[in-house]
Image 1 (cartoon, rainbow, N blue to C red):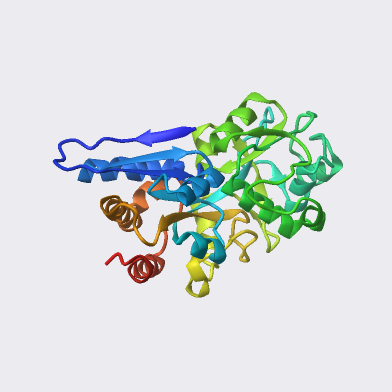
Image 2: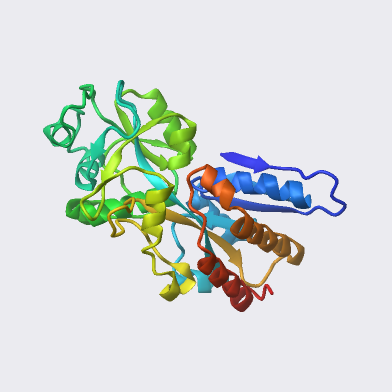
Length: 330
């Protein structure tokens, strides 16, 4: 578990609030927390424990907000008196430990990625990989698959993508925050998967892009739904996000995997913030909304510095209207 606890200086009546969940959003959330705390003195305690644990804790009412990369259903939101809204957009990237292969050199299709994660492709010298990478010297290592061991929104989006590009994956494994993985070893959080991939030669994993950069792990480029080869970066994440139909999605329930468009990164995702519509602690709820208003309206540069994509102004307006209509936050 990774947690951030940041103390503002000199505030007369600082308030501490708590949140938990997505490790996908942790890098940018920690940056937002630090700058917000410096400005207001309020403190954000966030535990990067995975989306599944974040949803469980907000359902139990033990935290002020949850964060998940997998949306809650309308039925579940209504049952627990919760609402959800997106916070930022980012990309999930396949990461590899292959000696001599630099970041962005290896090419993988969704179908080949699914076959690797099903254990059907077990060595990096497999003809299916070689055919995609003529001229690239790839070590003949055994492939060690690394996946998440905890309930994970990153896994939700990764397996959702594999279900869209591989009929066999869709019928045998399906998608979700936790699945019966056909092969591999499990790491906890994006942090745990990054650590395993760094340690195991020949391994492959999937993490939010900021973790690949922070840990200097090589990543693959992917062939998108338009048949184009694309690199992971803010531009390709933004291209996928631009296709999302937020206007007609109830509770902002939009999945962006395998998005159309020549520049779209195929495993693009958002993190939803989940809160009670009827506050359990008015002062904490007030600070939580103030923090997310600050993040959405003033956090663009922090998001861009980590290759996340800030939400467009029109979507931010829609979110703030949702706060007023569904949470009474005016």
